[in-house]
Image (cartoon, rainbow, N blue to C red):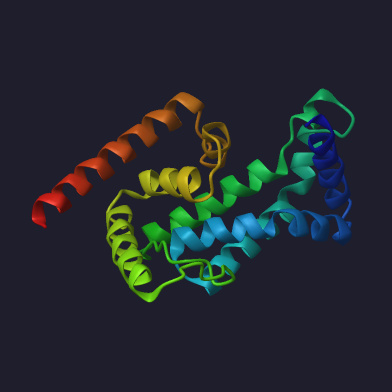
Length: 193
């Protein structure tokens, strides 16, 4: 694990020196997961691309500060994780856009293949998924982000906490509240049926 992190410090130093190839390398490594996070948060493929582009531009703009704080070849350099930094920035940009009045979606990411074998089972699954999406959409933004990062992107609690710029205990508490809210909503939905 130390080699990729040390590599991140070297990439930050190269970007600080305005090496565009370093930025291309970072984008090639992380764009797919960043796009999935953004898409699941805002529900629009074009907006998700804009969010990822904005996060990459912020990385380019902040690369000198990152390189200065985390010099390559030092223990501080080994502590730099560009993946965590970028996930946090994408999550924050998505939350900011949601707060500006946009809605979350849990629709499938466009490049994902349809895996449902039969039409009737697909219809049932779509109805169940639509109900789940509606319940997730009803959560407050930060609880929504915790659910998306943990269950849809399958990040560990530590990675999700880092993406949300929280300590692990605060994130676990947020995730606990989000799960409790979803359980309560599912129970109420079951009573309504």
